Length: 221
Image (cartoon, rainbow, N blue to C red; front, top):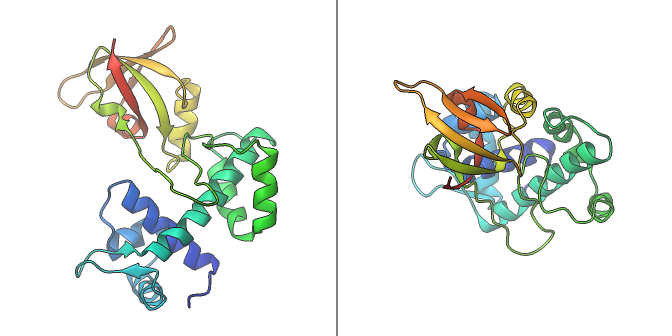
C-alpha cells in the first residue's frame, strides 16, 4: 500500500490532469508537468505501480487504475474547494488561488474539507470554471472546445479558463474574460495572427497562447 504523502498526491493529480487534458501521459511529460528529474519520476512511477494506483497500457504510456483515479479525485476536490474558499471568502485574486491551494491541499482534513464545502453552499465549480468532484459518485471533467477553434462570427460562452499560467489568467481577467462571460468571435488574422474577440464594448486581439487557455462552447452569432 502506498503512503499518501504530498509527493504521491502531486503525482496522482498531475497524471489525472494530463490525461483529462488529452495530453500524452508519459514519464517525460510527467517530469515536465511537475518540474522534476526523469529518475525521480521513474522511482515514483514504480511505487505507484506496486501500490496498484498506476498501470502501463504499453511501454510508454501511464494510466491511473480505478483506485488511482479515486485517490487523484480526492486531491483535485480539496484543491478546487480551497480555490473557491480563497476567492469567495478571502477575496484572493483568481490568478493567485491556485498557488495557495497547492500549499494547503495536503494538510486539509476530511472534516475541514466537508465544513468548507457546506459553508460555501456545496459549489460545483471553482473560480476558473473547473468542476469540483463530488465526495462520492461520478465526475465529469469535460473541457469543451478551446476558443481558438470557435468559428468567426460565433458567440462563445466561456466555461473554463486554464489556471496553468497565472500571468495569463491575470491578463484575461483584466480583459473581462471569465467563466460565464459570453464574447463574440469577430475574425482570425491570417498567417497565425491573433484572433479578434469582443467582450461587451471592448475589442481585443488574443494570440494562440491565450485562446488555447479559454474553453467553452460556441453558437451561431
